[in-house]
Image 1 (cartoon, helix red, strand yellow):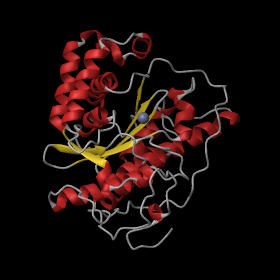
Image 2 (spheres, protein in one colour):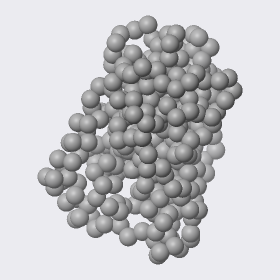
Image 3 (cartoon, helix red, strand yellow):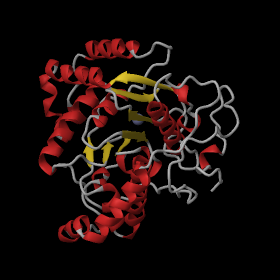
Length: 350
Ligand SMILES: [Zn+2]
C-alpha cells in the first residue's frame, strides 16, 4: 500500500467483544412456511447455513453490523449465488430474505463495465482511486438496476454489494462471503492509520486464520465501480502471491471475509475484529510491533501451525446441521433480535 501512515495518533477505542460466540456456526433452520428455494437439499442446506451466518454476523452485542448494515452470500454449486436482499437486518434474517442471482451474469456486467471504463484501470493505486471523479455513473446505475430487477421476481432486491459478493465468490476456494462494518475495524478504516491492518502480522493466530496478505481497497462508490476495482486488485494480488486474501478491507466502509464455508467466514471476521482491537489497544502504548518477515513465514509454514489450520478447516467444512426453527417470530419493524443466534446445533444456549 502506498499511504503507510506515521504512528502516533490515537484512534478511537475498540469495543469489547462478547466471549459468548459459539465456536461453530450453527445452521439456522428455515422458518415454518418459508419457501426457501423449492430446490435441492444441498441448496436448502446452503441457505440454512447462510441464514445462520447472517444472524451471527449481525448479533447486536458484536456491533459488526447494525440495522440493515452488512450482507452475506454463498455459492449454490450450480452457477448461482444466494445473497441477502437490500434493507434486511442481518440479526433477524430469514430464508426468504435472500435472493438468488446468476453469478456469471453478475460478473459479465462487472467485466463489461471495465471494458466500458478503461480510465478506471488505475484504481489499484490508492491515490488515483480516491481522487478520481466518478465516470458515467448513470449508465452503470441503469445496468445494475436491470440486472437486479431480473433477480427480483418476488420484489426483493439484492443488496447493492451483490456485485462484490460475486467477485469474491468467483475466487478459488471461496464459497461463502460475509460483509460487515465492525466498530473496531471501521475505527481504523476511517482513520489515517487504516494501512496498519495490512502492513504486517502481529501474532501467530492472526496468521493461521487470516493468512499474511489481507487487501486494503481505497474508498470507492459502493456498487459497480467498487466491484470492478476490487476484481482487478484481487487478480493482481493472486498473480503476486498465488492465493486469494482472506480479508478485503474497504477504506471508510468495512470488510469482506472470504471463506470456504460460512463457518470460516465467521472465524475470519472474528479474528479481523480482534486484530483491529489489538492495533487500537497498542496505539496508546507506542503502536503495534509487527512480527519479522522470517517469523511470519515460519508460522505460515511450520507443521504444527499447518495442522492447526487444517483442523480449523475440517471443523468448518462439515455440512451445517439443520435444526428446528429457533426463537420467536420476527415482529414487523423490529430490529431487536432475540437470543436465537446464541443457540448451538445441540440447542444449548452459550
Ligand atoms: Zn457495506
